[in-house]
Image (tube, rainbow, N blue to C red; front, side, top):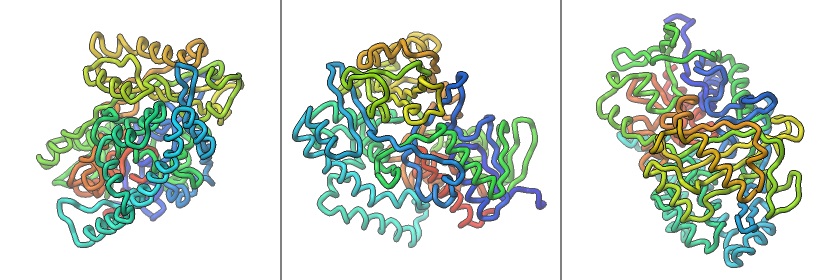
Length: 531
């Protein structure tokens, strides 16, 4: 291979792929990235869907973003601005009451006490409990998992250190294990007695998961979503000024500044494998490009079954990849509004603290969340789905014309193919149902909608390349975490195909806009000396 051959070639321009490109280029490797869409960022993009209205079309909030990545790549110097959301959560009810939660402990106490004095007393203890577990386990996000198929002494030592961190929880260890290994519902019911507090907290347990709060494994999903940190405050998430695409742009700038070459509108047709080794890629236009090492930020199904091809994989490994659960319960709606919603439970017009965070509607208790999932399991659309509404233009005036706003709605649970007509029949009808539920707590909300986009799971797959529409690149159950993510034999970013690595959310530590998968994968390539 000549000097023109890239040391590292990255398939897919998602935020993890961009992070990997930046780290590899900073290490002096000739790095090239191919992104199939005109926009970089994968699902982490800002798009002007209607003149003057710029929306975070898929991913819509940051909070899991690793502080080390922001610091090491100098993302703030390259334009990244995280806009802290505080209060973080607002749950208006049909009876005119509401629950507003944020970082102010006294305000939280007063809000929760309106529903339960006991819950108000317990809430700080619950937050402290989650924080202590997070501090024990969070270091694992930034490390390469050991090889469960061929454990080595140093891998055992690394696991032992993690076990010691958990043992520091002492008397809290049984509760921690119940959370990490079991369903979220009984954990929340043990801590709290009131709605809507329990259902508000439970939404973090099911976001993006084909599960209800009563499903095993949702306790970990809840925990996964509280590990984020913004401005030193754990669990406080943020918007990105300019939309989520601004984060991808900052990562791309870091990569380019380090010498990486980034190509857009360049879809990859296949990863070329010869005698068990990845040697390059073939683009959709027929151009073949050699490379010493290839990293894929696409999900495992796309990477292995579509781009590599089953025939080039060891049979047990191919079967394991084929068994990954890519079912998605998620539907995304993007809206342009001519005014802010008004909530009778808070009174008054104009922007208020309750507009800044996630607004919960629809399914407003644990039973309703369970019912929502059962409907999707039966391939029906729920009557009262879970709705998370965010209004980023309240804190970022660059996203919409003056006096107008953009809204993101994350809705679940929905099936891949609804009975009685599929999405061609149901897309607009279900969107109307969602807006009607918002009208219950914000009268006139539907009338404020100027434009809307509805992205069901098949649309998320088609537009963003997410198999099944799954935002996590595959389920995050206990059988798909750490040494098992995405499958044994590929948990260390390296794969059974020599010189091929995973760097997307299908790898450890999983989904969410955190950049850890790309950062860790780049470190693995450098440690292995593959490029």
